Length: 418
Length: 218
Image (cartoon, rainbow over the protein chains, first blue to last red):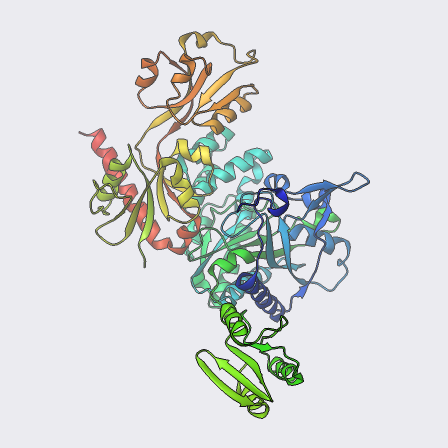
């Protein structure tokens, strides 16, 4: 039967998670929390909705359009947060500015975007990520990348590539040109597509020529290992673009020294991302997923919008996307079902098994015999204890049934591995 | 490594695209079969034959690592994929066309302009960018009929030689964009199989260049 009243439906792009999926998500979040904490990051928990004006700060036009907006009773526009970085910037600039720097912050929280669901990402989805605030160094950039790589490995994802770009190179090259935001957007899009004909046409239309045009046309090709750096150097037109390449080179060296260079591809053509990025940017791609699993980058101008200038770098990972590719085992079915008879020993046995860390379910419907066995089988429980009366207990494991007394059942439970 | 999936447009372009892959060193086993999935004989590719409009979707989602799609289709969908190589085939142009008397039409003063197209997004963008108002009527084919039966005043459609337009008594008013078939690549695949895909792009680029040389010097 179809649910034909809205009351029993969900809005498009939302979902309910239960059983294995809910357990997997919880386990992944625990795992990520552990990784972030091992690197010395501390959790921040922020409100789900805020003033629209705060959240729109530094956000791209697309992200602004995708926000869920509503009004409070005073008529202020509120919005559900579409990402975690902007609210973090607000907190840092307004509340944490006099803390010892750098700040190591992590978050796990839901964000909301009015967009078509894509590769596990729905209109409400969970981001887990870190922000490293107050350090404009290559070491900070490399650390954030290293944490991202650690997170992927912790999820048993072995086959991945990190695409490392540097938006400051393009900005440096373009620093003598006066381009409107929409023209810059067009140019970035043409670079990002790697469509050379379209890129040349866009450059012509924008009146960009000579060595600037030459450098920009080369960007889509500038993708690969350290050889790319050399080639990019020959295209620098000013100090800003040279500084950008120096930084990228240093970050790459640090990653190679960490032994993760093989997972990194340098890509100067990756110029489009969150609007607030100002330095290195990266995307993490994983075998079996057509979209990026994590994204990050340096955003030195964002926090300043809230009053105080501070450099920062961070990344976020889509937990639902990670669920599609992670290889961690999850167990959710009860290890043991126990009949809840009048015999007080039943409760004792259950407590014993719980103390061993097992998942124990008491049958609160008071079933016994065949009916209870059918139930235990239906939920896939590994073991079942029934009371047969007179201090005798039936222990059922798969096809094996044994009638035991209280002492032997207890011994049995003690012998189980958790 | 598993075979890389390549989404190719079924129909008009299919034979020529498979031929080009053959010239680039990736011959398809049985190019004339009616199957929708073909393997190349070297074990590198699995060719998937999809509706031309669906190719960018397969590639964006990573169901195919590579694909071939016309720019007309790419601009209509705006998928987030790479377009690293023009294949110099399926060349055509998206044009604004109408009956001969439409030449005298002043688009700025027409309040009730109706435009039929299989490319509603590009048609809408064309009028919007010029500050013109038009009602866009979305059709899935045989767009030339629309002016004849009074469904629309003008059409935005793809033209290769212009014959179909002429046969339906229509004339080209303006070219909106040139279009050719592009090689498209999924972003994740591009990084995960970087060396392999770079090599494929290079081999296809060489094959395209050889064709162009032959055209110049017959």
